[in-house]
Amino acid sequence: MSTLSPAAIELVQQTFAEVGRDPQQLVEAFYGRLFSLAPEFRPLFPEDMREQQKKLLQSLTLVVNNLKKPEAVVPAVQELGRRHIDYGVKPEHYDTVGAALVWALAQQLGPQWNTEVQDAWVAAYSLVANVMIEASQA
Image (cartoon, rainbow, N blue to C red; front, side, top):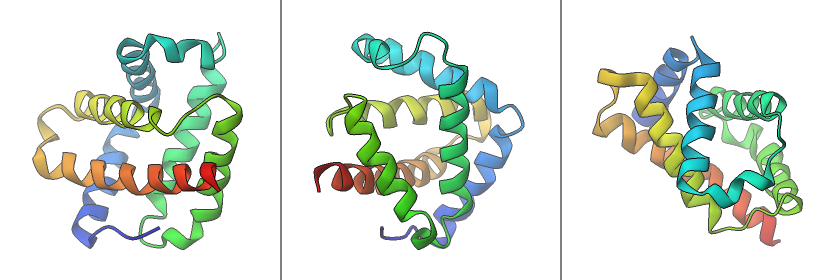
């Protein structure tokens, strides 16, 4: 997994700390947007989303906290990519997931959201998604 610039890492970590004050709102916004963008994804998830929301938040926290040392999380991210095959996730789904995540973050951050923050999050998500996709195809 390649790395982000120090400035991008700082932006992602700072803004994640901000949305982390109300993480439930972030994950609910994310899944709401995801199912709005791609209703066909809904059957891939359990009816009760609480556990899934918790898993998403744990994964985001792990990745964001380790952006300065990505080698520490690559094995976990690769495993996540392999597991997502069993859930019916295809490589082309990752763009929609990324769009939903960026939208949810923008909603949570409000006026703190700007092009620089968006670019940092898009770059961070792209790194993670690429590792997951590569692992799912190995």
